[in-house]
Length: 144
Image (cartoon, rainbow, N blue to C red; front, side, top):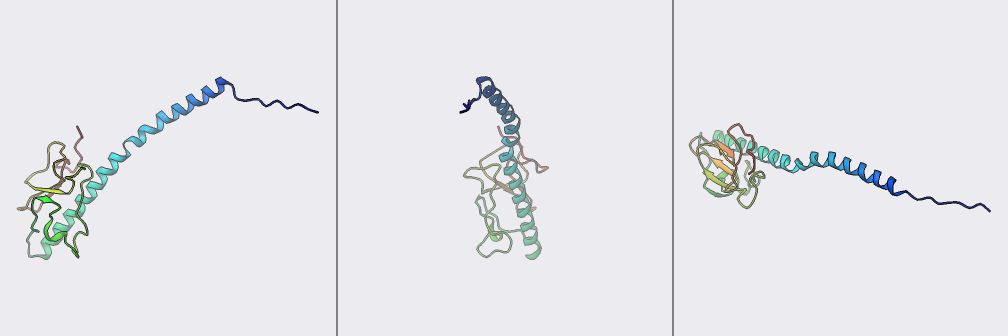
C-alpha cells in the first residue's frame, strides 16, 4: 500500500499570489475608474447634438422661427411634445446630473464653470443651445 502525501500551498506561495493579484488590480482599476465620467460626458454631448439638430429642423420647418423654450424643467416647447417629430423625450444632461439635469435656462453664452443648477442653456434670439458645465468648444468643464 502506497501512502500519498497531499501537500498544500505554503504561506510564501500564497503571499506571492496575493501580491501579484494586488499589482494587477492596481493596474486595471484606474483605467475603469474614469469610465463612468467618460460615459456621462459622451451621453451629454450626444444629447446636445440631438437638441441642436431638433432646433435647426424646427427652425427650417416653421418659417425661420425658433421653438418656444421656457426656463424650467424640460420645457423645450414644441420640440418635445407627445407625438413630436423632433425629440421623443426630454434631454438629460448626465454630466451636470442631479435633479436639475433637464432644467433649461435662457442665456447668451455657455458656462465658464461647473454647475448643477441646470442642464441646458438656450438662447431664444439665436437658437443656440449649450450643455451646462460644458465650455464654448463643447468640452466638459472639470467637476470641483
